[in-house]
Image 1 (cartoon, rainbow, N blue to C red):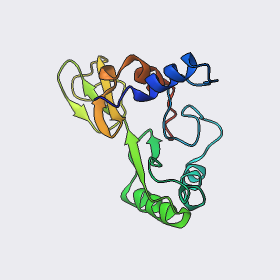
Image 2: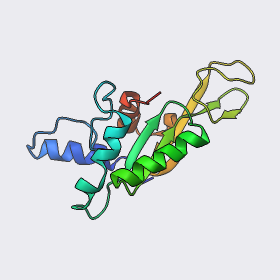
Image 3: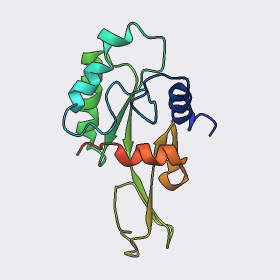
Image 4: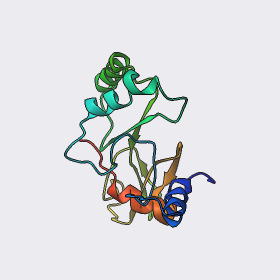
Length: 152
């Protein structure tokens, strides 16, 4: 994926050019990726809503990291929130679990295989729009993923 590591490269290049760069990886979030205490789900929709995106011409997707899938009613509520805040482009990221021993894939975020019990598991999630094993992310993206906050 050519663009996967661009957020890391751009931050590195800006730092080398003398700019103050507080993060090792740029992303399109309007909040810090590991902000587990401050920015709630509704706030994230507001940040990516009509008051700000009216001034943008692209690249304004809300990446909502959830620890688990919602119920159908929960997803419908997200659509209502998106409509009311004017957030026209969002995606939900939930880690899937892949067992490295038996190959079982679960749509849930597990730390142990539900089929064979192995703890040798990997997670898959979106990076730059594609579902991919976290272990296959570039080093910079793996570091960024390790800091991501996933809402319960």
